[in-house]
Length: 200
Image (cartoon, rainbow, N blue to C red; front, side, top):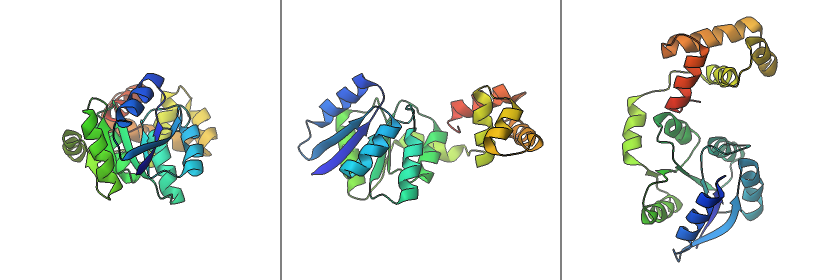
């Protein structure tokens, strides 16, 4: 049996995925989580083979969960199932050790086959998204991404500096660099574009 944990913040979608996968005789649902923190707690309690997770969830996102799993060396393989067909998300997911990345409109049997493939040591990546991911590289550094994400939440440069333990001038430099790299006019446009591309 392939034991999997399901993390999805929308209860209707979570229920539908669980119902579809319950029809597969070799897949066993061992837990469900409505947000990233709950998923992290359950991961260590039920030790599944696979984590099937959305990307955007309250608390920890699916990407942050994958990064945490990678950092702690947990023996669980991660499969992301999402509505976000963003090449930037896929690149970051692969960097975080994610083994599967599928879109929610994929047929149910394709999802079940992907879980089997990942469980047996392979990868399962939406092919069109995989091509797009290699066509468009993320130009932002990790620090520029952090600063831009906080700017997108409405924080001032002074607030961002305080939050990240940086000087005000350094934050201004990171914002200016991000705006320049993205070829936009200001930090709001930079945030929108980076978010749309999946780089945040």
